Amino acid sequence: AQSVTQLDSQVPVFEEAPVELRCNYSSSVSVYLFWYVQYPNQGLQLLLKYLSGSTLVKSINGFEAEFNKSQTSFHLRKPSVHISDTAEYFCAVTTGTASKLTFGTGTRLQVTL
Amino acid sequence: GAGVSQTPSNKVTEKGKYVELRCDPISGHTALYWYRQSLGQGPEFLIYFQGTGAADDSGLPNDRFFAVRPEGSVSTLKIQRTERGDSAVYLCASSLRRGSAIDFGPGTRLTVL
Image 1 (spheres, rainbow over the protein chains, first blue to last red):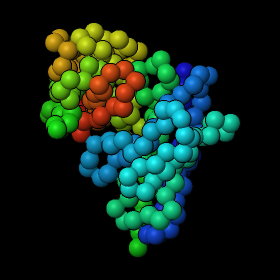
Image 2 (image 1 turned 30 degrees about the horizontal axis):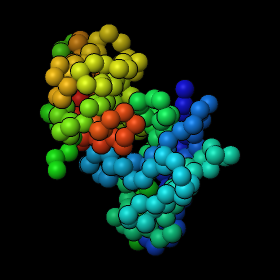
Image 3 (image 1 turned 60 degrees about the horizontal axis):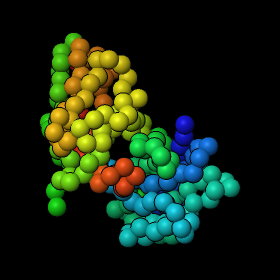
Image 4 (image 1 turned 90 degrees about the horizontal axis):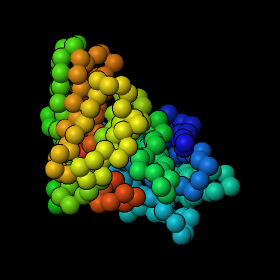
């Protein structure tokens, strides 16, 4: 069975500052990793994913995450956040043969002026 | 194109009542998932359908919960004898096939009084 740990339940940050949202996973087999974002009063949206290949993956709105197998991590970063990035961010994992995603408890990113 | 849709968006019921939650997946998506998201938590897997059959129902909490997908498209999650602890947002998701990226619906917020 796999599990996901998001160490920070809330991350307050000023606009234009950099941010890192931490995600660690546990699995005995190879994994696929995802970050989902949930904006206020909206559904979950896929932000980015790691399936194979390059360990650094990027989203269209400036976020990136790096798969680190040795540290079993998939931290999400953005060099300069915007007010509109305020949302709940969920890290999720699945294995190559499993059909279900296992989610972390989420990190609320609060961007202020 | 149209995303995953769920009805109703909100459902308030009394303890002991029966409820049905409906999910319309993206057209052509063969895999369908139900998740439950309690306040302050990440989504928890309930059940996964591949076509008409439940391929994995290991997340259903007890026999009060049941889901069907009789024609391989629309799915209904059924909860008998509802309890206050069943209050949560019930999320439906679909994917083109097992292992593909999963698209989530907006959810149904269930409140059991």
